[in-house]
Length: 110
Length: 112
Image 1 (cartoon, helix red, strand yellow):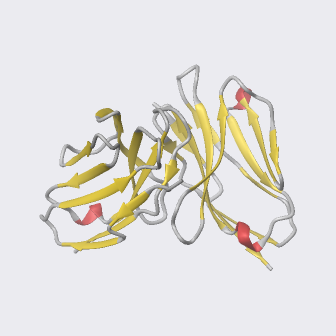
Image 2: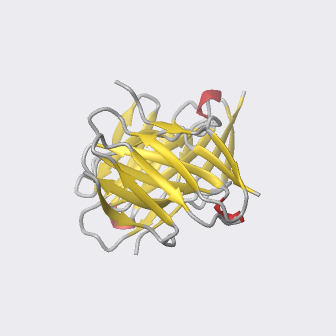
């Protein structure tokens, strides 16, 4: 069975603060993929990143960075210098069958 | 390149009725997955279609059924609607079954 846990239900920060969204997963698969999606108020899920289980290199894309640690089954997402436009619900997901966490609602205050 | 589209945007049905939701996959994508997202929760996997065949199913009853057409568009059918079926139904397409999925805007179904 697969499971994704996003323990932070809601986070509120002030603009320009850094924020880290936690994701812990469980799977018996030896090969799997991890994803992060953003869901703004419009409702459409926006793909952010895919990570293979055999690639533990951290990734940075602009203000976004991801820390994948297989030893602790975690795939955390950090937004540096947060902006109001980052306000959304963020989902971590695990594949082979795409299993989503319950999401973390991020509120960035101006 | 056209993204994933879904129709209708909103739908209101009554208990016991049947509903059909439609999804057009992104150009070049051969895999379509359907998800149900209840308010305040993460999407739940319903099933996936790959090259017109069902390729995996989540924990949903048989009254949730689907179809994928030769052009890779897809339908989700729900029979005997229940109040708990009220949710946002999301369709996602991908090139091959394990690649990243791109989501449509969803259909919001309300069952009264």
